[in-house]
Length: 159
View 1: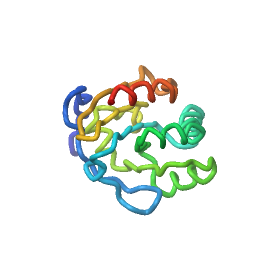
View 2: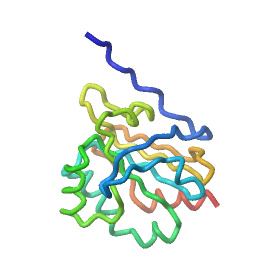
View 3: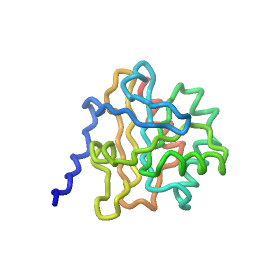
View 4: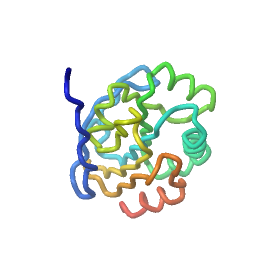
């Protein structure tokens, strides 16, 4: 019997964002450090096809012009498999690619895995062009979410 892997603490604002590589719905791996030079929003969401997650990702789709205009890369991350995320993306005509943390390693590294539920809570990490976390918000429970306007206010602070 193996001991469960403990989740790390949530990385602090002002520290380097833990790097990772995850498969995407585009069929290619995405490495966080390869996106240096642009601000990145990591948006952990619990599970595809659930109400709040659908509303959140559809809001990103609906506000895509504003997000793209700010040069922001949005990386939604869930523990769902790539095929499940592809179906979810297609069903809702989502704009951005979704990342699969099926092994839960990235959710653990960011301290957002709910071990007893085996999925992440909803959490946001805004990473600047140099790879430093500039804003982090972990929801009190997965049924809550940030609005795009609040996220864009944080992006505007990056300068």
